[in-house]
Structure formats: structure tokens, C-alpha cells
Length: 426
Image (tube, rainbow, N blue to C red; front, side, top):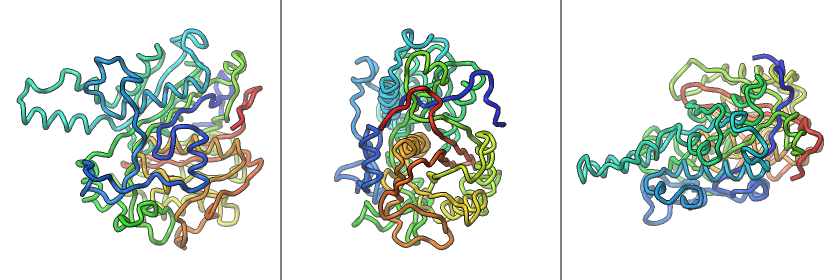
């Protein structure tokens, strides 16, 4: 990966859509991040998660009938429904109608996710109870990991490149990176990039719990359960949600009079090659990833004015990321850092896209969201933490967003000023 821009110049974000535990609009999500309005709650009485987790972060309800024809709503996983909602909102935000604003074969979709495991589990139970004839013929189109991308393509008439990426919690950010690669290569004018995750069902929650990965002992204070980089952190909080960004060649956006939120300046991807679930303790893969992203963007460490950290609130993960950030930027030159999973929980692969959107909004507004619940910073995570309220940062220039996943997958995105004639206000 190099800093070459390819044949088609700069790439910009012209639209965004989100379904998160703290809101569905840029204004709602920004306010929650800055004000500390938490989406972390105890599972309600009667919830399937009751007894499996102390705390979770639920997204808002989305009516399947609002995004799918009535016959197809019977067995469609929530992850697909959220993906469709976020994609529709992002395309509307970008003022893109396929066929009017872009050739159907010149727009692509890269929309990732773990898939509809809850739907699969429910059908396994149905088969056990009713036999093989009880299994729905809609099962596969209702739960496969590629169906978020496929359904978005079907609904909007997107006939260009289509893909789904399976790099766990790095999948959403990698979808954006691959979209950037596609646009730079001149193979599309617009790419719809994102991820949707619906992990809030007992079996997945139980495996995280049994692996001792979840925050424990916070039932009386659910909003305090996710506390990235804090001494008292003891695990992540599972969340659900979806995020979608519309990426576009700046020249194409200018030609149709569209305004850009931010430029996608570069990205990096590496693998720790260390362990299936545990990050490299010295943060070697994450360090190399951030350096690759900087090189791809043609920037120096001092050009980055803010880092949105992966920051899951786990002991090993936060410590390894903090070490990697210090290695890349130096102890004296470290930019401000915050981790917004403190209010959204960990939406797995969807976190990377939502956090990229949050980074874009911070860049546009010149205000950095804090890491909430960071009351007593761990000295092993010594960084320039944004905490106890948002920090004004006018003219920050470029920002970085990190995402790391099971299997050692690391992705860093670098975002900067839009390369369009018109800039979005937020």
C-alpha cells in the first residue's frame, strides 16, 4: 500500500447512516458522545439476555417492513434490517439515487457483518421441535453474512462491485479501506461501505461471558461498565448496531454538486500473526498498521490531530493499543485520544464504521469527544486522553480511527479535509 492516489484522485465521504445504541443521526450520536449519554443498560426483564450478561447496548427498533417487501420480513435477521436502514439513510444523506446520480454499474457496495447467527439458532430450535419440514426456506437469504450487501444492492439497484468482509471487529473499517482502494483504482464512482452486527442473543453472549471477556460487576451501574483505559476496566460490553458511509470520487461529487464531509486520505491493514483472540502484547501489528495508514496518506505522525481508539475496555487490548500509539507518535508528540465504546458498547465490526463517522464529525466540528468513565487512567495506558468533557480542537487537519479484531486483524483509517468544492456543515 502506498500513498499513490491512482487514476481518479481524491476520495470523500458524502453520506453517512447509523443505527446505534445512542441514536440514528449525526446530531444524536455527536450529542451522546460529547455529553456522555450512555447506551449501556441492564437487559430488561424477560429479555433473552437476562442471566447471560449484566449490561448490554441495544440499538433502537427498526421495522423490517420499512426496508423490505412484506413477504420477505418473515425470517430476516436483525443485522440485515439494520444494514438496510443505515444504507438507505446514508444514500439519502448523500443525495444519491442510483440511475439518476450514478450509473448502476459504477456504484459498489461493501457491507460486512458476522451474519444472522440468532436467526440460525432459532431455526435449529424449530427443526428440533418440528422436524426438517419446519425449517424456513427463507433461512439462507435471511442470515448469510453476504446478505447485508446483497439486500442493499437489490433495494437500490446497485449493480457494480459487491462484497462482504469477514475480519471480525475490523470488518467495518476494512470495508471502508477496500472501498477507498476500489475508488482509487477507478473501478467505481461511488461505494457504499459499512457493517451491521446483531450479537445480542444468549449463545453469543454466553461464549463471550464464559471466555471472561465481558465487563462484570456493573449491574448496579450499567453506564459505568465500559471504561476504556481506566484502571477499573474489566471487559467489554456487547452492543448492536450498523454504520454506513458513502464514499465517492471527489471529481464525481463535484460534477453533481455534492458536498463532502471529509476526505479518506489513507488506510493500513496488518495481522498480528500471534493468537486467535488475544492481541500482540507489545502492539506490534497495530503499530505497523498505523504506520502504513500514515504512509498511504502521505502524512507524518505530527499531522494527526486526533485518534479515535479501538478501546474496548479490556485489560490486554487497551494496554497493547496504548503502547502502539505511543510507538507511532512518540510520548511527547501523542495526539489527543478517546474511545467512544464507553457509551456505545462494542458493536463488533459495526464499531469501526460508526467510529469513523464520529471521527469525521469531530474533524468537521473541531470538537473531540471524550472517553467517558475514564476516572482513573491506567498508567500503562499513558496517553493524551480526552476525558471529563469534550475538547475544542479547531483546525485539527487529519484524524485516525483504529479497529482491531479477533484473528489479529488490524485496520487504521486516516481522514482529512474534504477534497470537494463544497463542504458539509454539521
